Length: 133
Image 1 (cartoon, rainbow, N blue to C red):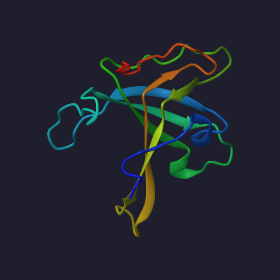
Image 2: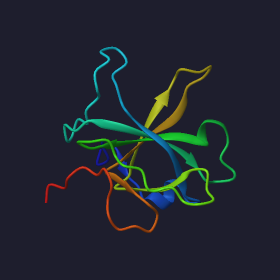
Image 3: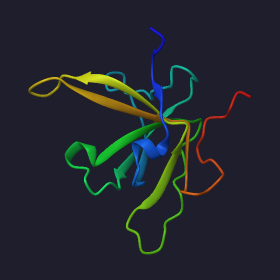
Image 4: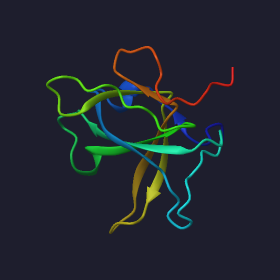
């Protein structure tokens, strides 16, 4: 099969109405209590908690975590006057579908990853993994 692993996806496809960051925390392994690392880059993983700005998003779809592989904790964009949360845009996003069988019946769920984050419309990357090229 030609498709293996995560599927590349544009930020606007995942968050067509935008997204707001609530915070960032290190991803730790539940069993070992050690920091998780990205399998491809070997960099530590950070989870950015995000609220989807889509007014039709409900339940679990309203708040998601996007994992970012970076040497140091990604810096969230600056606060915007008049907004309760920080607008954010992710770069180099990918989505990995998986079967979530923790509920009453199995369902398809998605794990979101990104190479970096920035303020919407900004050019500079914040907390991005260093490019190999």
